[in-house]
Image 1 (tube, one colour):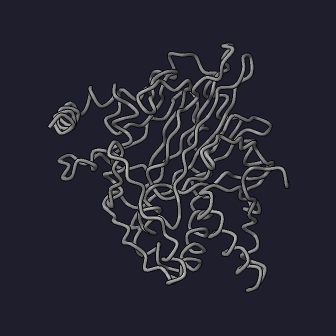
Image 2 (cartoon, rainbow, N blue to C red):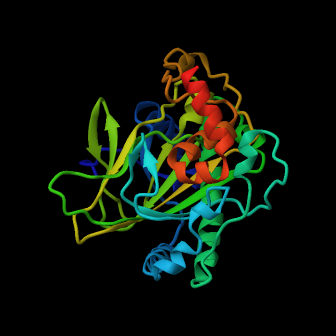
Length: 340
């Protein structure tokens, strides 16, 4: 694997004694300080579960259009459900993909307090494919365990106690996107999803075996991150960059559309704190604090300490049609502040 552009870390080292666990934590800290991205193997997720996930994903996208549109996200004020091809935007440009978004299964808050409470609510599931919910629920539970294990390792690697993130997460806000990138026959690369940084803490990305397209920005250049069998691509989000004051780095990444007639399934899992949680700044050991770079300053993309504010910012930008239908007051308020 020496020709890969991202480091490869083995989660099973954490269960192989103190020396192996310390080695993993050192590698984890280095990878997310230097790159913000890595491959994770040794997770215990079985090929059988991966195959079931891929199968139900493909079966969903092969449903008649009427069945998919029955759960279209324009029907959900919580930004859940199916997004048709071209229905999402990154940096204002159309992403060439279709997807279904699944978040924590909750009742809607009848009288939201902070604006981000509007994200709380039920998912939309296709009546034509009941197995999808079963498989996605199992996937959610397996990856939640992996995410918690990683965060405990990060806490120790950053000089905090092992339970640091557990204490500050509350009831986690998770998001699973089941994505299909259709092939394009244009001669130039097309935007499957545009360049962006994730807005939360941690992302575990599963990619259909043998399907490329993911690119990560390193030293100002776009480099390919081809799939590694049995692995997840892991990256940190803006909130972990904030909590470490730039010692760990959130990195731009994008997906280039496959060439027609090929297509590509990918399933990112976002593991984040409760919407109302604020990750405090971690008091780093002196040797780490000395090389913290500070939080990236981007006036067009402010990083908020409260996770829900980051999440709402991203959803309003990515799905302007849902925002206009269900949250016109938020759209107007943000337009007014932008011109003030």
